[in-house]
View 1 (cartoon, rainbow, N blue to C red):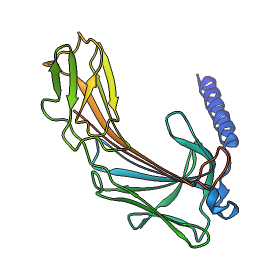
View 2 (cartoon, rainbow, N blue to C red):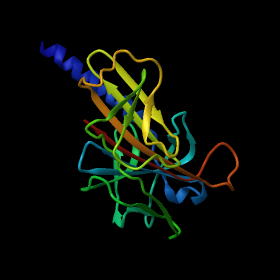
View 3 (cartoon, rainbow, N blue to C red):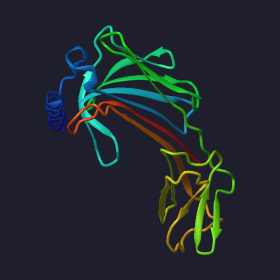
View 4 (cartoon, helix red, strand yellow):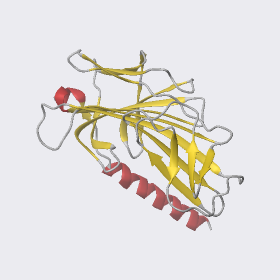
Length: 236
């Protein structure tokens, strides 16, 4: 039994060493032209009284099919730094991700999100956004013939926002979203026979805002500028 335990520990250690050795070192910001750095900012609050803020700096950046940026990580070298709503964000190393800057806010959702990046030349780059919260009312499901719609408490969809709803119980699940500006509900398409308006379901509703500011002066497939993603989720 002891030999088996030691063997498993050795295998896990070797895997960790391999994964860490494959991780790419971050590039110091003073070695990258400012105009080739993409700053990716994200804020999320998921059934919590705390909002988590991150900032990631990338070069040779592209976007995947879900509109999430990726590329080579950049680490800020002094005097460069990043603040959120006036507070300095702290550098952290994610095990399989790389260098990221984080801060948490003891607030369900700040009224304003403002990141200020000071580059190595002392120039400040300000990026800001705002998004309203969302919640589920007591009667969140409306029926119209054979179709159903999920309504929410909060403002309608704005440009750049997406409202996503998932409904599930032990037997079935439904998923729908809308990006239509002005929408106040999400319609579940198709003929639905298993959804009982009086039954209990685990319902999640999220609001996501995506803002991408591209530097139009750059050529090629890569992008610089900034990308902001705000995510607010609540469930019953």
